[in-house]
Amino acid sequence: MRTFSDQEQARRDKLAKLQGTGVEVYPARVKRTHQIHQLLDDWKDKQPVVIAGRVRASRIQGGSAFLKLEDETGSLQVFLQKKLLPDFSDSVKLIDLGDFLEIAGTTFVTKRGEKTVDATKLAWLAKALRPLPSDWHGLADIETRYRFRELDILTNPVVKDIFLKRGAVLRTVRRFLVEREFVEVETPMLQSIPGGATARPFVTHHHALDTDLYLRIAPELYLKRLIVGGFGRVFEIGRNFRNEGIDHDHNPEFTMMECYAAYTDYAWMMDLTEDLLIAVASAVNGKPEIKIGQKLFKISKPFPRFTYRQALLHMTKIDIDTVSDQELLKLGRAIGTDLPDGTGRALMLDEIFKTHVRPKFIAPGFLMDHPTELSPLAKKKADNPKYVERFQLLVGGTELANAFSELNDPDDQRQRFEAQEKLRAKGDDQAQRIDESYIRSLEYGMPPTSGLGVGIDRMTAILTNQKALKDVILFPTLKPEKP
Image (cartoon, rainbow, N blue to C red; front, side, top):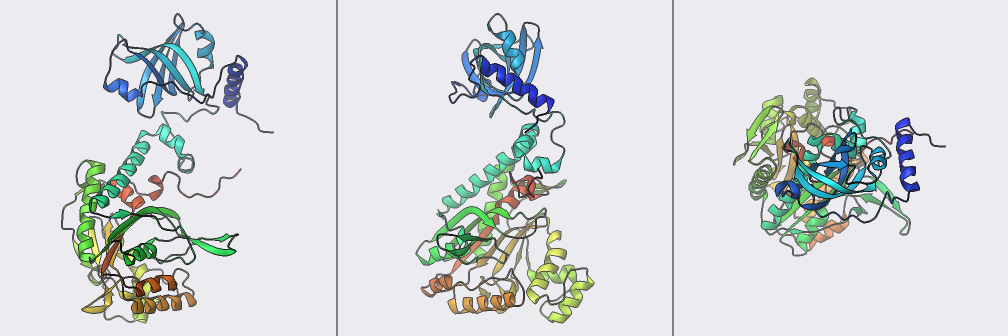
């Protein structure tokens, strides 16, 4: 049998009293005439109104009481007095902090200058059966904040503001692309072959088809098939899923925007990416700037640009043009990189880069022209096929965006996939797989195309100066709560 704390039992006793007198505590209809911000923005004394919201404060003084009522737009004082409310004494005793009430009354301003509604009628909309966390102390436990985000928002106004800004990020990205003639589309989240990125997928079983399916790790291959089909510019904003570790920079499910533009290359996409970041920063922060820690960065074009080889050589003294695989392993370990025996060249380069190079890119900048073995979906550089036409936008020590001149040669693509399959055979469970449907699509012909992927979670974290992705994801992935 479930047991309740003293506070919870007291609230349930009040609920029973209300229901015992015929009060409908959880009605389906609300008669609200105004949101609170509408009253505050266009205040008129002696105006009849009906407002609704949550009780956030209560002060009883004999035959009168003051409540602070809060809706989704703001808060307003409510004045209850015995002479206007026949059931005042009984009702006031049954109000708890957190209850939702509907208040009918008339507006006025108190002698202290506070805008107030003088209540003539009170009705319950919902009874809070658990006490809310204290407004003064909020939620101190990080695990509880992430697990019960609704309470975090209620007690920490800054948290709500972060997620309002996340909404502004999404709106601005979508509007920016539509204004540039990109068409928004939707592609499958359940895929027979997970492709478009180097990552370990989640697998599930579809009983009707009796087959395993994978939650998508990226929408890339399907979006490029639409370019083959005749779309000129497409984009998708949606969830991706990667069965990997969780840290300040990664969550197993995350939101990405990917876009593709026919008849363009990665230089064109770099210009678009600069404009996109400037537009989103301006929408979220009021001007094209971001704050990382205590340092403010003004964002202006052009962003600094470094080649992958230049950055690695400058920060690690390793020249990937001349170093062998064995030498790379030795040099990587010498500077403190975790490189187990048997690690392939691509993974060695990736680990060295993530450990020693990426964290040092704080101001927005482009890292470009990556080694071919790191980029199985990107077009090789014409003047040096050891590298590909690829760039990453790095900000605050993290990768914010990734883009290519897309590989559109089906035979070259097959060779790259086959090389990935060999890595899988050697134990690399993140290597990509051969997708025959995608290769077949390329064989019908895809024009020169550039593509861009932007992490919406990371972009929000950067623009709101948050250190961890969990702080910008409403309900991040956590271990199940213990009973």
